[in-house]
Structures are given as C-alpha cells and as structure tokens.
Amino acid sequence: MAADVAAMPRTGEEKTPGYAWVILIVVFLASFTVPVNFFKVPTIAPVLIEQFNMGDNFGWMMSMFTFISILLSFPAAGLAKKFGMRIVTIVSISAAIAGGLIGVFAVNMPMLLFGRFLEGLCMGFFGVIAPAMITQWFPRKTVGLAAGIWSIWMPAGGAVMSAVVPIIFGATNSWQVVWWVAIFYSAIALVLFLVFYRVPPDMTKEALANRSDEEREAAKGGFKRAMSLSIIFIGIAFVIYNLCNNGTVNTYLPLYLQDKSIDMQTAGLIAALQLALAIVANALGGFVSDRLGTRKWPMVFGFAALMVGTWMIFDFGGSVPLLLGGVLIAGLFPGAVSACATAAIPELIPNKEDQGYGMAMLGFGAGVGSFIGGLALGWLNPVFGSWEMAAHVLLVPLILIGIVATLFVKVR
Image (cartoon, rainbow, N blue to C red; front, side):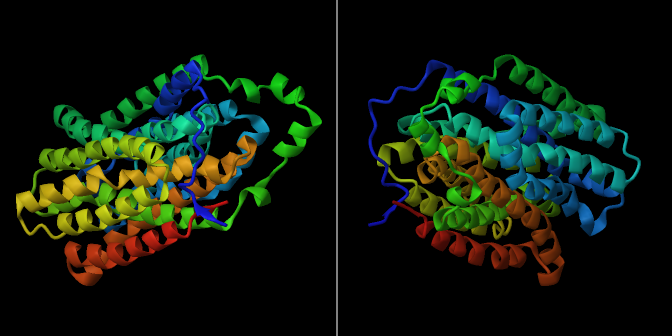
C-alpha cells in the first residue's frame, strides 16, 4: 500500500552530529553566492536596460543565469559523485567570480550575458550539490529543519540584494560597484568553504573502503534506481514553483512596481519584504513538516497561498493595503514548497550516494522554471496589454497543475 511522502517513521533515537550544524552554515554561506549574483540585477533593471539598449530582452539577464543550470543539473550529480562535492563547489564559485569580472568590464550586452552565463554555473551546481551535502549529515528527524533553513538561500539573498543594491547604486551611481560587491562576497564564501567543509564520517574514503559486502550491495544504485514517478512529479511541481515564484514574482516585481510609478528604492524595499517573509516560510515549512510528519500538505498549502498572493500583487490597482497583503501572503507561505521538496528527497531515495540525482531533479526544475519565468511575463505583458492580465493568465493555471503534481507524490 502506498502512502504519501509524509508517512515518515519516527526515529527519535537518531542524534544529529554537532558538526552537522557547522556544515549547514558553511554550505549555506557558499550557496548564498548564487542569489547574491542572481538578484543583483532586478532592482537596477531600468539602468541596465537603458545603458545596454536591451528593450524587451531584459528577461535574458535573468534567464541566461538559469539556462546553464538546466544543462548542468543531472551532469552535476554525476560530476559530484565522480570528483567529490568539494571540487565541484570550488569550480562553481570560481566560475561565479570569473563571470562577475567579465560583467564588470562588459561593453555590450553579449559580453554582459556571457558573464551571466558563467555565473549561472554556480546555480547549476549548487542547486544539486548543496542540499545533498546537507542532507547527508542530518538524520530524518531533523532533515526537514535543516532543509528548510538551507532553502532560505534564494529568498534571503533576494531580500538582501533588493534592499542593498539601490543603496549602493544611489551612493555610487555605478552598477559596476554592485558587481564588485558580489565578487567580494563570492571570494569570502569560497575561503570559508575550503576551511570548514567536511564529508560525513560514514562517507569518507576510509569508511567506504571498510564497508561489508552487504553494505556495498545495499548501496548500489545509480540514476535509474534513483528515479521514480514520485521524483518526476516532485520535479514538475518544482518547475512550476520556480517559474511562478522565482522566475516571475522575484524577477519582475521591482520592475512592475516602478512601472506603476513607485520609485526604485521603495520598489526594492517592497521586493525585499516579500523575500524576507519567504525566509520565515522556508525555515518554518521544514520544521512544521517534521512535526506533522508530512511533506505533501505543506506544499499544497504553499501553492495555494502563492496563487492568492500573486493575484493580489498583480491586481492591486494602486491600493497599498492590497499590495502589502499580497506581498505578505506570497512571501510568508509558498516557501514551504521549496523546503518540503528538498526534505522529501532523502525519503524518496534512501541511498545517500544516489540522493544527488533527486536533488538534480529539483535543480533541473528550478532551472527550467526560473528560465521560463524570467522570460514569460516580459513577453506576455505586451501581448495582453497589461501586467495584470499577463500575470493571471500565466500563474493561475500553472499553480493548479503544481498542486495536482504534488498530490501524486508517493513513497512506499
């Protein structure tokens, strides 16, 4: 008899290793490289559009970042399994630094986009290896909390950059300084990772070499064994979540508000508020799902809240209370989708060595969703003649599909 992914055995005897929390911190700080680079763009979109004569092609500034993550999601899992997560992490952060340097000296849009492409390597790798690095350290009783804390990386980075970028630009009148700040942070994150990252005791080379024949047989897996219908359905749900939330709302909210005659700094603060609320949602979503023993229903609730919140945001009609209400709902609850989907992977794929393939499905979903979302609303806006109609036509049907896909996620 199949039970939903929520039906988790209670293993209160399992203890969380003390160093697991160090790993969570250092992996989170390394992961934060991604949103710092990703969200340095939206708030100063009008400046970049004018200087590089982008027109309606601004969406590529966000989608180019995510395009490479689509290509890398599943290869990243294989590369991490072959070369180790430490090496792959070093390469990905280094690529973000190189992409930032190219962007600083960009003289045209193709050069700027090439820098964004290299920065996207970081997102392609981290979306897969970071959650795997964390979940390998945590037992089932606390993996939801750990996944929830880690999953605030994107909204926290978006909140910080939405608030800080207008201040930096206002003080320097230079978008290049914003790029330098992102480069500086990436370099610090790389150093901290090199110093503090460790593999779990049961995943060291010595531990793997000393496994019994029974343990080796049980650990055998691979891509085909890791994949299941539930992994596919949770991947579909994650595509939709990222398309609607990250690709659409987080990308276009500052530009949409500025188009509605709200100044840059206020638009940035409103976007930062929405993302700051998502920090609470992600962490709380993982914790609550641990306590309730379910991943599925917090995800369904998160999708429903996303539909209501985005409808209010893109149809506020000048009503500040309606706008802030939408920001509150869209910020405070949908993050449970990300936290619970991440925490569900170890339950769907018990073999630690193969969990990277499940994370790859989420990374692929995040990349595809963010890529399409980064372009879709910008293209639909002139087609339907308004932000409001374009947003409703795009988001509502997709969110309903996301709910249905979540309901099909099951584990034996």
